[in-house]
Amino acid sequence: MENRELLRVNHLKKYFQTPSGTLSAVDDVTFGINSMETLGVVGESGCGKSTLGRCILRLHEPTAGEVIFEDRNILECNKAEMKELRSKMQIIFQDPYASLNPRMTVSQAIAAPLIIQGIYKPSEKEKIRKRVAEMMDVVGLAPRLVNSYPHELDGGRRQRIGIARALSVNPKFIVCDEPVSALDVSIQAQVLNLMQDLQAQMGLTYLFITHNLSVVKHLSNQILVMYLGQLVEKATPKQLFKNPVHPYTQALLSAIPEA
Ligand code: ADP
Image 1: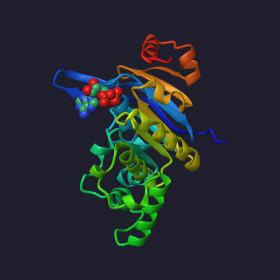
Image 2: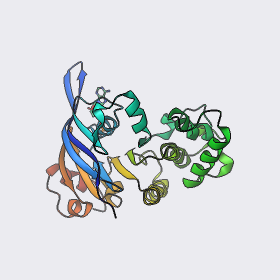
Image 3: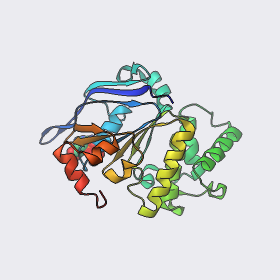
Image 4: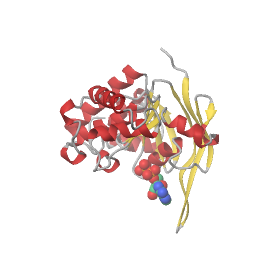
């Protein structure tokens, strides 16, 4: 089992200028993620989790620091290098309804990254059709839904489209930004199980962001606890649940009924 570090974040900072001054959304955060592992990132709403995930993918431009992916600092990559990296580093969003174009069918939504990344030309219709069918199968979407629109599907199926889109370009690393938080509790477990199966099948590495510690308890190798933009604790789930060191981690744990 390979456990080489795939991604390293060094002293990452993201400041936003707001009318009331400078806000340190991510404040000097350093950590690494091993290949094919899951790093959970937990903390209350507004503590900087999404900003961290977006900075790693350069959807937000960090203020300072390094993001080392496969031995290069992606913050120094030019546009062409970033385009190449985009197929290796993907994101799954919380609300698939907001992140999916309502006018695109399932097939168009899954095909879009393949075309944007230049994996297929729009004219290569048969190849695209085959890849879309393959991805729908991988995420458990029935073939009959290929021409459906997002509003015709339930939340679980919409999130399966979000996952299929992210995986269609064959990434290695995925930022999962609250991927089950908008789903009914009964559907959450199905989607989490799917994500775990896909991780094993495809050798994926996850940064899994959630405000709900119980969601990442079972699927993380390590958990980072963030508080006000800073990393306050890093531990295995077992250590964290048994012996939380930081008072904020203790507060997070006490919010979980079964903990
Ligand atoms: P979380 O994902 O943990 O809920 P966020 O990363 O979304 O937290 O936000 C962290 C902080 O940064 C919050 O105070 C939020 O209001 C602020 N923030 C996020 N995005 C922006 C932005 N584009 N401009 C200004 N402030 C922002």
